[in-house]
Image (cartoon, rainbow, N blue to C red; front, side):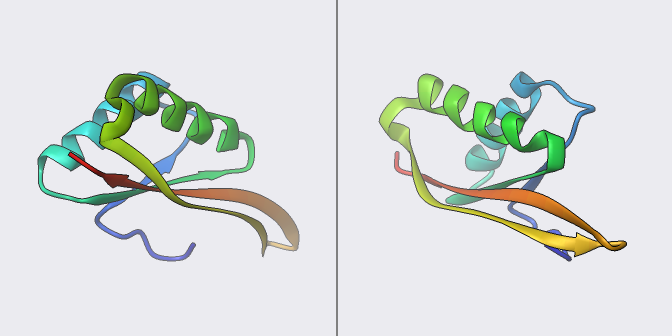
Length: 90
């Protein structure tokens, strides 16, 4: 999780879930077929909530291609993360 890719959205505490949902929809409309959500630490739940709201809004227009969970060590602390890869179907 070192370098941010152009089709990647890093979830943080600063924005609302609805704003991230809109960001994903905009990226799909800009031509990206895959978007990756990444939540770290306390923002893991928000990444999952973004996926759930996208599924509610787009239905079969978006599928969960891959979900990775794990942890990494930063400054001698272990930090958990989730990576959710979404694919546009429509």
